[in-house]
Image 1 (cartoon, rainbow, N blue to C red):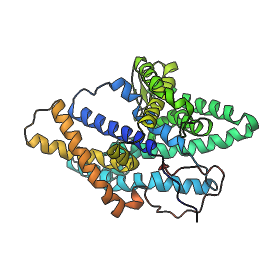
Image 2: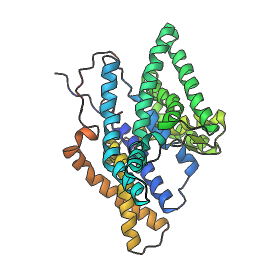
Image 3: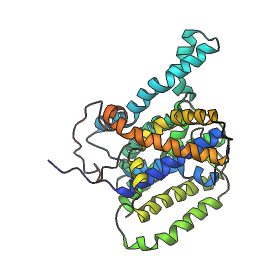
Image 4: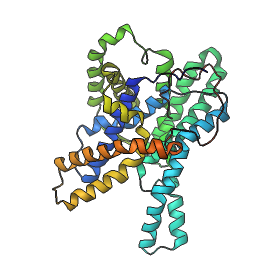
Length: 353
């Protein structure tokens, strides 16, 4: 029986940076406090998630095996927590404003399609599931080009991504986050190519220069004017600079994590970032409600207090989820899968999506 492959700690650290930035952003936005360096962080949060996910793309034994695994890791958590946390709240809201039970139930069950539901951060799970399917299809198509496979893959993913970005710039919205998934495909592809055609996951002689390169990359991304919002697929960045700035910012954070290597708590929450993604909105909503009852003035102190308390509660929820909800938080498979046998099955265990 082969030994379980070791995790790459700095990737979990990068995931930790990412999910904590997401939690802080949502808290600051809800409270109505200005988020520091919002333009730069908007080029980091979701792009980093998509690049990290692409790093660990695996084909597995065939498409059915691939589909089952992505269903277990992404679709099952999304559907379960949508039904448990979102649907009842939306049903109650519909009934409370005088809508019929039939109308309220329909709106609650189809909120994901119309992109209007409570606990909205879970949208990423659905979008990433679609991105995985898109990339698998584009990858198979690219292989028809033989030894020009990599070039074809880049061109095709950029073509698909450009369609999504065009829709975003034109404010043409597709349901179920399809437009966002199209836009994100090149970022996912970037992660895939970085794994297979660079030393980003391995030690390299060039690592000694990272402390010089990382600030330059972040500065270049920061100097690109504008921000992006992946959940709505709306962007306020020059179209020609959109992908370069997001790619620079995301890769810079990965390289920064590679330099730092490990920060115990951040690495820990990064390993289980899906749990923080799923639960952080209902948790911080309760924390804000309780702090309001204490008559604390809303401002930066209120926001940071909310972030600290929310983060502590989320950290305590991780062992609970591992113990009682493993199949719904990507820790165990709900749908039985076989054993991956392809050469591209990957070389780490960091893959959670």
